[in-house]
Length: 509
Image (cartoon, rainbow, N blue to C red; front, top):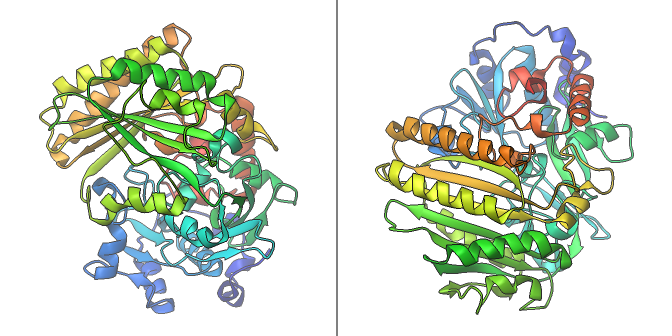
C-alpha cells in the first residue's frame, strides 16, 4: 500500500474517508479547482480554453458534453490519489473518464457542479520481462494497446474497436472477439492485477490471491463503485495475426441472416476461436434495413466451418474486408471514420435486451423493431440505428465463469443466449424525447413478450445498457450482496457512490 507523497506531507492520507464526514450537501467546486490550478497548473483546464474544450468533448455522445467547473488530468496514481482525497476533503462532486464510449450523459462527465478527472495523461504501456503480462494505464484505448503489442506477436483479450477506452470496457466485463475462447475480458485470468486508488487515497494492488482478492473479484464486472483503477495488468497471448473483417450483405436477406445468427449461438462452441458480430442497420436515408457481420477467427484458417453460414453461398457478401492481419491493422480500419470526425457532435444512446437463443424471439425483435422504427423515427434529424444480435455460446459463458468466476454469474444451463444491443444516433436535442419514448415503449413490449415465453434473461451487459436499465439487479442475489459488502469494506464513506455519482452503483440495486 502506498499514498501520494504530497498527501503524506500534508497529513491528508492519515485521515480516513469516514473522518472526512461527508456533508449531506456538496460544496462548490471552486476551492477544488483553485487547488488544482495552483498545484498542477499545466494539468488543470478551465472553460474557454482549447484543452478544456478538447477534454469536455471527448465523450462519444454530445449529450455527455456537460461542461464541468474544471478538468484535472493526473499523470500518475499518486496524483489520482491526491485528487480523490482533495475532492473528498472539500466535499466536491467529481467524475472520471477513460475513453468516453458510454453514451449515458453523466457516466464519465459532470456539469459545473463538479470536477472532471480525465485519464488522458495516464497512457503508459509496459510489457513484463517474460512477455506474459502487459501493464496498461487507463488513459489508453485498445488501438494503442494492440499497436504496442504488435511487434512482439502478442495480443490480449481486449476491445473489438480501437477507439474504445480500456477502463470502462474492463470494469463492465468486456466483450472481445477472443471471448468465445477465453471468456469476458476481465474474467478467467485475463487480468492478472488491478492497481487501485481507494477512497481514502491509499494505492493498492489487487490480485486473485493477495489480501485484496475480494476487490479483485468485484472489479471483474462490478463497475466503478469500489476504486479508481490506475493500472490493469493483462495476460498476453501469442497471436501475431488473425482473420477479421466486415462482410456487408445489403438489404433483403433478413431470413437467412437471422438463421445464421441463431445457428452460431447454438453451434459456435464447436470452434471457440471464431466470433461474429452481426448488425442490422437502418437510417432515415435508407428504404430498408441493411445487414452486416464482422467475422473473426483466431488462427490461420481462412474459411473455418463455424463461419460458413456468414459466407457464400449461404450469405453472399456484396463487399467484405475479411482478411489475415494483426488486430492493430484491423482497428486502423474500424477507427478511420472516427479519425475523420464522422459522427462527431451527434447524440447517442444504447439499450440492451438479453434473451435465450430462440429463432422465434430473434425474428420477433427484428421485425418489431424495424417496422416500428421506420414509422415512428423517420422524421428524426440525421437518425441512424443499429441492432446487433450477439450470439453468446455455452463456451463463452463457461470460460467467463472459470478461474474464480465473476460478479455477473451468468447461468450456463439457460444458455446459449443472444444479447441484442440497440444503438441510436441523431443530431438534434429536440428529438431526445421522441427517442426516449420509442426506446421505452418498444422495449417494454419486447420484454413482456420474452418473459411470457420464458425466453428473457435478467443479465444485462453493463457496457451496452441504458441508464434506465437495472443492470445489477440482473446479477445473482448472492453476488450483489457480496458486491455491496466489498463496496462497504473499501469505501465506507461511499465516495465512489455519492461523490462520484456517474454510472451504475451496486448500492442502488
